[in-house]
Amino acid sequence: MEKDDLLFYNEYEQFYLMAKDSEAFKHFCRKAFGEDFSQDGFSDVSQVERIIPFIPKDKKAHILDIGCGNGKLLGYLQKKTGAYIYGFDYSGNAIKTAKELYEKDSEFTQGCIGEVDYPVDKFDVITSMDTMYFAPDMSAFVDQIMKWLKKGGVFFTCYQEGDVMPKTADENTSVLAMILKDKKIDYDCIDITKESYDLLLRKREAALSLKEEFIKEGNEEWFEMLVAQTDYADKPFDEYKKEMARYIYTVRA
Image (tube, rainbow, N blue to C red):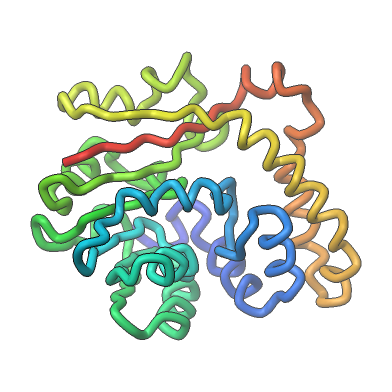
């Protein structure tokens, strides 16, 4: 597939150039999410902290992040646990930055879901923060993830409905949940829709507070994008949850 045909490819190439150089965006991430992971979504530090209990403490764990961006989330987990970190992303700009930032005990690869492969039983933990939607065949990709996991390993994914993926009745009727059920794969799920709504409010407040900083950098268009992403915050939560939902699924191999 040509890169220009990939979902949001050109936008993300530009996004990761901005994220590398913009101090305003770094400030925005810390104010909105609690840490700068160069987030473009809803993965705040409280969601990332939920991964840590699944990382083995009695050995050098191996962690893979699907759609790792510039690697900052993995770098945070490595700092907390000492793990080997692996990530892949289709953005060349993101992977270039990841390799520059994290040289030790790491492996970063540019590639798409369905093209990148790893050995069987390679990882203790695999994470996907809003990246399952990029799979051309989500069912086949679930098979691949389960193949990569060690026995007892954990797949951890934050999964949103209402934008890229259709809104369904609840956490047990999402596209991902139905795939897992069809494969007879047990899962646990936490509904964090209210957390996401509250985060939208923080994102809007943080962006507005940094407007002049973005403008001084010449990044007014990125400021406008961040504000536009929070439009749903204008609705009461009871209205928001009719259209949007966010879940954390965990699967143990």
